[in-house]
Image 1 (cartoon, one colour):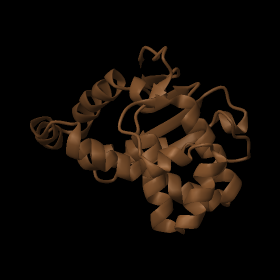
Image 2: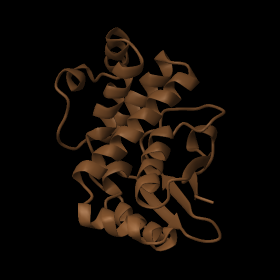
Image 3: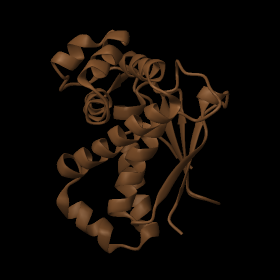
Image 4: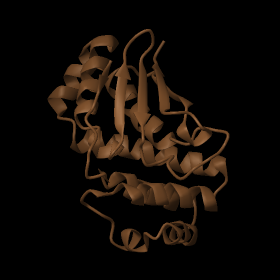
Length: 201
Protein backbone atom coordinates (compact mmCIF):
# COMPACT_ATOMS: atom_id res chain seq x y z
CA UNK A 1 0.00 0.00 0.00
CA UNK A 2 1.30 3.45 -0.91
CA UNK A 3 -0.16 6.91 -0.41
CA UNK A 4 0.71 10.33 -1.77
CA UNK A 5 1.30 13.42 0.33
CA UNK A 6 -1.72 15.79 0.18
CA UNK A 7 -1.31 19.22 -1.36
CA UNK A 8 -1.75 21.69 1.53
CA UNK A 9 -2.52 24.54 -0.87
CA UNK A 10 -5.66 22.73 -2.07
CA UNK A 11 -5.15 23.46 -5.77
CA UNK A 12 -6.08 21.36 -8.80
CA UNK A 13 -4.86 21.26 -12.40
CA UNK A 14 -6.93 23.37 -14.84
CA UNK A 15 -8.07 20.33 -16.85
CA UNK A 16 -10.63 19.68 -14.12
CA UNK A 17 -12.34 22.89 -15.27
CA UNK A 18 -11.52 23.22 -18.95
CA UNK A 19 -12.37 19.63 -19.94
CA UNK A 20 -15.78 19.85 -18.27
CA UNK A 21 -16.46 22.95 -20.39
CA UNK A 22 -15.28 21.12 -23.51
CA UNK A 23 -17.48 18.09 -22.80
CA UNK A 24 -20.51 20.23 -21.94
CA UNK A 25 -20.20 22.11 -25.22
CA UNK A 26 -19.84 18.86 -27.13
CA UNK A 27 -22.85 17.15 -25.56
CA UNK A 28 -25.11 20.13 -24.82
CA UNK A 29 -25.71 23.74 -25.84
CA UNK A 30 -23.56 26.78 -25.23
CA UNK A 31 -26.45 28.23 -23.25
CA UNK A 32 -26.53 25.27 -20.86
CA UNK A 33 -22.75 25.38 -20.55
CA UNK A 34 -22.95 29.03 -19.55
CA UNK A 35 -25.72 28.29 -17.06
CA UNK A 36 -23.68 25.56 -15.37
CA UNK A 37 -20.60 27.75 -15.06
CA UNK A 38 -22.65 30.71 -13.87
CA UNK A 39 -24.29 28.57 -11.17
CA UNK A 40 -20.82 27.50 -10.05
CA UNK A 41 -19.64 31.12 -9.92
CA UNK A 42 -17.12 30.37 -12.67
CA UNK A 43 -18.27 32.53 -15.58
CA UNK A 44 -14.81 34.08 -15.88
CA UNK A 45 -13.23 30.63 -16.09
CA UNK A 46 -15.48 29.86 -19.07
CA UNK A 47 -14.65 33.13 -20.82
CA UNK A 48 -10.93 32.90 -20.06
CA UNK A 49 -10.06 29.23 -19.47
CA UNK A 50 -7.47 28.82 -16.70
CA UNK A 51 -3.98 27.68 -17.60
CA UNK A 52 -2.60 27.51 -14.05
CA UNK A 53 -3.65 25.56 -10.96
CA UNK A 54 -7.09 26.47 -9.62
CA UNK A 55 -8.60 26.38 -6.14
CA UNK A 56 -10.16 22.99 -5.43
CA UNK A 57 -13.40 24.70 -4.38
CA UNK A 58 -13.89 25.57 -8.07
CA UNK A 59 -14.02 21.86 -8.88
CA UNK A 60 -16.49 21.13 -6.07
CA UNK A 61 -18.73 23.99 -7.18
CA UNK A 62 -18.61 22.97 -10.84
CA UNK A 63 -19.64 19.37 -10.18
CA UNK A 64 -22.39 20.56 -7.85
CA UNK A 65 -23.71 22.82 -10.62
CA UNK A 66 -23.38 20.01 -13.16
CA UNK A 67 -25.70 17.84 -11.07
CA UNK A 68 -28.12 20.72 -10.52
CA UNK A 69 -28.60 21.33 -14.25
CA UNK A 70 -28.33 17.79 -15.63
CA UNK A 71 -29.81 14.40 -14.85
CA UNK A 72 -27.49 11.92 -13.10
CA UNK A 73 -26.93 10.07 -16.38
CA UNK A 74 -26.20 13.29 -18.28
CA UNK A 75 -23.79 14.47 -15.59
CA UNK A 76 -22.09 11.08 -15.75
CA UNK A 77 -21.61 11.29 -19.52
CA UNK A 78 -20.17 14.81 -19.33
CA UNK A 79 -17.82 13.84 -16.51
CA UNK A 80 -16.66 10.71 -18.32
CA UNK A 81 -15.92 12.56 -21.54
CA UNK A 82 -14.05 15.22 -19.57
CA UNK A 83 -12.03 12.48 -17.86
CA UNK A 84 -11.12 10.85 -21.16
CA UNK A 85 -10.11 14.24 -22.57
CA UNK A 86 -7.90 14.79 -19.54
CA UNK A 87 -6.29 11.40 -20.09
CA UNK A 88 -5.64 12.29 -23.73
CA UNK A 89 -4.07 15.59 -22.65
CA UNK A 90 -1.74 13.80 -20.23
CA UNK A 91 -0.72 11.33 -22.93
CA UNK A 92 -0.04 14.13 -25.39
CA UNK A 93 1.72 16.58 -23.10
CA UNK A 94 2.75 15.14 -19.72
CA UNK A 95 3.92 11.54 -20.09
CA UNK A 96 7.18 11.35 -22.08
CA UNK A 97 6.93 9.29 -25.26
CA UNK A 98 9.89 7.01 -24.34
CA UNK A 99 8.11 6.16 -21.08
CA UNK A 100 4.89 5.44 -22.97
CA UNK A 101 6.73 3.08 -25.33
CA UNK A 102 8.28 1.26 -22.37
CA UNK A 103 4.95 0.83 -20.60
CA UNK A 104 3.28 -0.51 -23.75
CA UNK A 105 6.12 -3.01 -24.18
CA UNK A 106 6.04 -4.31 -20.61
CA UNK A 107 3.57 -6.91 -19.30
CA UNK A 108 0.48 -5.35 -17.74
CA UNK A 109 1.51 -6.00 -14.11
CA UNK A 110 4.87 -4.19 -14.15
CA UNK A 111 3.49 -1.47 -16.44
CA UNK A 112 0.67 -0.84 -13.99
CA UNK A 113 3.06 -0.45 -11.05
CA UNK A 114 5.26 2.01 -12.93
CA UNK A 115 2.27 4.03 -14.14
CA UNK A 116 0.75 4.17 -10.66
CA UNK A 117 4.04 5.31 -9.17
CA UNK A 118 4.01 8.23 -11.61
CA UNK A 119 0.33 8.95 -10.93
CA UNK A 120 0.95 9.01 -7.19
CA UNK A 121 3.91 11.32 -7.61
CA UNK A 122 1.61 13.79 -9.35
CA UNK A 123 -1.59 13.01 -7.46
CA UNK A 124 -1.56 16.42 -5.77
CA UNK A 125 -2.57 17.92 -9.12
CA UNK A 126 -5.97 16.19 -9.01
CA UNK A 127 -6.54 15.34 -5.33
CA UNK A 128 -5.78 18.82 -3.98
CA UNK A 129 -5.90 18.62 -0.20
CA UNK A 130 -7.06 15.01 -0.50
CA UNK A 131 -4.99 11.88 -1.02
CA UNK A 132 -4.60 8.83 -3.26
CA UNK A 133 -3.84 5.41 -1.79
CA UNK A 134 -2.88 2.44 -3.98
CA UNK A 135 -3.36 -1.21 -3.00
CA UNK A 136 -2.07 -3.85 -5.40
CA UNK A 137 -3.39 -6.94 -3.57
CA UNK A 138 -5.66 -8.84 -3.47
CA UNK A 139 -7.05 -6.68 -6.29
CA UNK A 140 -5.73 -3.42 -7.69
CA UNK A 141 -7.60 -0.70 -5.85
CA UNK A 142 -7.30 3.09 -5.81
CA UNK A 143 -8.72 5.01 -2.86
CA UNK A 144 -9.32 8.76 -3.02
CA UNK A 145 -9.96 10.55 0.25
CA UNK A 146 -11.26 14.11 0.75
CA UNK A 147 -11.14 14.99 -2.94
CA UNK A 148 -13.16 17.91 -4.34
CA UNK A 149 -15.53 16.28 -6.86
CA UNK A 150 -17.95 14.54 -4.44
CA UNK A 151 -17.54 17.03 -1.61
CA UNK A 152 -20.85 18.89 -2.17
CA UNK A 153 -22.82 15.97 -3.59
CA UNK A 154 -25.13 13.40 -2.02
CA UNK A 155 -26.97 10.59 -3.73
CA UNK A 156 -27.47 6.88 -4.21
CA UNK A 157 -24.79 6.39 -6.88
CA UNK A 158 -21.07 7.16 -7.12
CA UNK A 159 -20.29 10.47 -8.83
CA UNK A 160 -16.51 10.46 -9.46
CA UNK A 161 -16.83 9.53 -13.12
CA UNK A 162 -14.19 12.11 -14.09
CA UNK A 163 -11.54 10.32 -12.04
CA UNK A 164 -12.61 6.85 -13.21
CA UNK A 165 -12.52 7.84 -16.88
CA UNK A 166 -9.14 9.56 -16.54
CA UNK A 167 -7.58 6.50 -14.91
CA UNK A 168 -9.25 4.15 -17.39
CA UNK A 169 -8.00 6.07 -20.41
CA UNK A 170 -4.39 6.02 -19.19
CA UNK A 171 -4.54 2.32 -18.34
CA UNK A 172 -6.19 1.35 -21.63
CA UNK A 173 -3.48 3.08 -23.65
CA UNK A 174 -0.43 2.28 -21.51
CA UNK A 175 -1.19 -0.94 -19.60
CA UNK A 176 -3.95 -3.07 -21.18
CA UNK A 177 -6.66 -2.15 -23.72
CA UNK A 178 -9.34 -4.07 -21.80
CA UNK A 179 -8.86 -2.17 -18.54
CA UNK A 180 -11.99 -1.18 -16.67
CA UNK A 181 -12.02 1.24 -13.74
CA UNK A 182 -15.14 1.07 -11.59
CA UNK A 183 -15.97 3.24 -8.60
CA UNK A 184 -17.38 0.85 -6.00
CA UNK A 185 -17.59 3.26 -3.06
CA UNK A 186 -18.12 7.04 -3.03
CA UNK A 187 -18.29 9.64 -0.29
CA UNK A 188 -21.33 11.11 -2.08
CA UNK A 189 -23.24 7.98 -1.03
CA UNK A 190 -21.98 8.13 2.55
CA UNK A 191 -18.84 5.99 2.23
CA UNK A 192 -15.70 7.14 4.08
CA UNK A 193 -13.69 7.32 0.84
CA UNK A 194 -14.00 6.89 -2.92
CA UNK A 195 -12.74 3.46 -3.97
CA UNK A 196 -11.99 2.39 -7.54
CA UNK A 197 -11.33 -1.17 -8.67
CA UNK A 198 -9.02 -1.63 -11.66
CA UNK A 199 -9.07 -4.82 -13.74
CA UNK A 200 -8.09 -5.98 -17.21
CA UNK A 201 -8.92 -9.69 -17.13
